[in-house]
Length: 333
Image 1: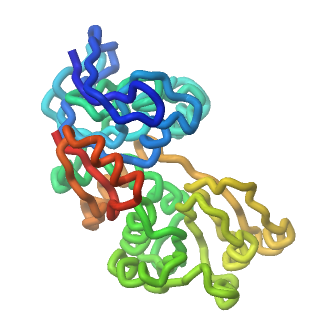
Image 2: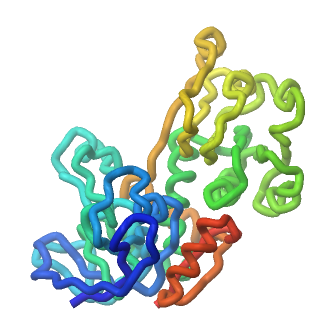
């Protein structure tokens, strides 16, 4: 019997819940949860904003814990291993995406708490290939947010070959953005933070930003033409995307991690003349997560967190929903 906290209906507080689980499948592991981060995606699932939730279910997909049971065919993990588990808990392992190392793009991907029970619990079950060993130097309380938010911002930086001398801008200095600034800085980039509020400037600089743009200022981007190799958008609000595209250098990329509510409109001409790109990115493959964890451990990249007991899950969710957390909430068993 596995005990946890489940959503029974949309927009209601979580309540105690328990479920039976049969023997592990050959490639599954059982993880004893020590910590689980709260992501805004959990709120969307609890409220059924994406029309994909099936009640009751236990949310939570930013897990850190210890492997306590392994399936008969598991070779990469052992009992006692400390692991992290993110948004994805499985894939088909046979499609074109999986065979090319892009398991996060698998059309048959299994989400950790969609159609199954997640990490606001004593234990969680996962495909062993998505339970990633945590570096010794990385404390478990920081690992959960890195498994989802961390790899989400790390992945486009790696895929766009951000190294010393490159120029990166990050839109939004929140749960995702504060990690993106750290990663980009530690990769050697010149980093610019973009926010609606000047009050975020000092904090953005503490995370590694060298420059700061207040996006609500008139003609805010006019002096940044042909400036950036990569712009990472972490927000869900509309912006002047056309002006932002013009701040990209030749072959630069405007990458969306947050999805604005309205279609993104840019001039095709501004893309053509500098071979600029507009793209999207979602989480990361197991290999990308391993790379991100190693990088985080080596370069001391850590999310800023607030820790609360698992039993206080509803209070913690309320604080996240009201945007009162700086910057990631973590539940602790």
